[in-house]
Length: 406
Ligand code: FAD
Image (cartoon, rainbow, N blue to C red; front, side, top):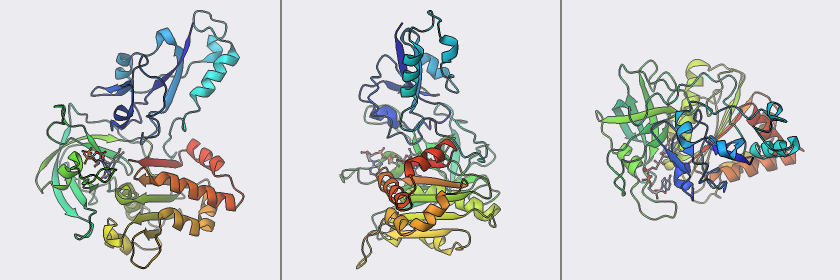
């Protein structure tokens, strides 16, 4: 009987952002209102979808008998992934599997050797609620505020948006995202896809004790190639007026969550709207744990102070609460500096933090930032005789290394 290493998506972690479906070159990924799933008959394991996934939910594999691969209908029903195949039970059972233990072990090894395996939340994170509202049954929020938080004379048009849920239940944690359904249809006449936005406020509201949350949204006016476009979701959100009603789904995200442990050191590295979850985490610490012994360190890059969202309020935060490293790449008469450059300057501090089992790393922002940050950690560790890949592996296994890029 032929074994298959079946590609699956973890429904508990998936944030339904559609990135995988858009990326798959053979149309093996599809979705319904509940889950994103992989068609075993179409998937050729090319792995093109793995790195664009912002959560790692895409990087899941199970060894199954080919004839009994999970169908897409099976996967639509799942709330969680099925257990791994139990090799010990299968050994010698010809009806189940025709492979020696060595062969099967090798297959399982491959199955676990994706780009990182299952992503874990920090051990001390609060329990997140996910997928309470889906596309078929969204929750309606009311816009309580919308204002620009970057200088008017810059191209970077980033807005702070406050959504009010009134008496409805919509529990979120710092690090989670919500979905916004832009009204209308796409160019193929299908309803517009949900757009994901990170929650920028603490779990107890943009204003403590009020049933609201905030978002940090950048108006997309150029695509990745610099061509003029009008991003559907971002323009819709940035143009919302106070009192407008918005269809919201989610919350999403069960791993990119803040540790609640007061000893936890949190290293936050971001550009642009990647700062949203870090604003949320910092505000939670400020409100509820301001004397926690764990350190907060923020590396935040922008072209200029005028393009750095929340520049003014960030500067007002006490240095005792958070070490703010704001770096700029387009200041006149000053050499360009990126977050990874400042990290290199702070190599001693970072290696000290990396030695602690209480240190957590979060990277959030545009996709292209991850490589430079990884390379900086590699250099910093190498300079001190430490091995970054080993440290990162250990951090991932204990839910202390998190990347969300889009
Ligand atoms: P689309 O209409 O989908 O795209 C129009 C064109 O612009 C396309 O060609 C597309 O390739 C290109 N494009 C899309 N995004 C960009 C970009 N950033 N830069 C250059 N070209 C682009 N966005 C935020 O503003 N704030 C957030 O907090 C935030 N959080 C996110 C969290 C997650 C987990 C994910 C997956 C995404 C997040 N995003 C966030 C991105 C957001 O979901 C949308 O992708 C973004 O707003 C663009 O959507 P759009 O509908 O405006 O553009």
